[in-house]
Length: 119
Image 1 (tube, one colour):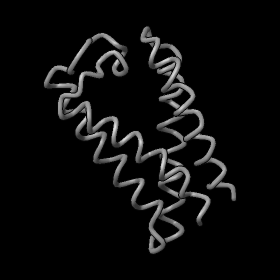
Image 2: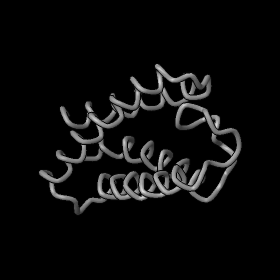
Image 3: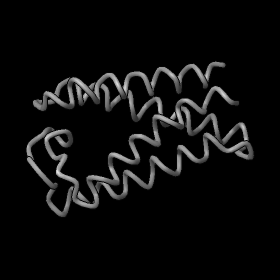
């Protein structure tokens, strides 16, 4: 299902962003409600590390030709739910960056995942 590959690319972007947060990039205003300017505190950096690994694993599985169709469909359903929730949370965020960047990013990722799931 090659239509899942665009979803995988956007999940890779989320993985890269979360990895940056995990290693201390000063992007706190763009994550977790924007309450932490600069690098995140250790607890949230740990959460970002786990999130990065999960997004990367999902992206790789969706992009791989060898992933079975049932596994791909389960992953896509999970992505739709996760980024759908992310869209709502980011839209309600106090962070202008989350509202302006991550709300549409999550919405597009979810729409692509839904399209791949239905296609």
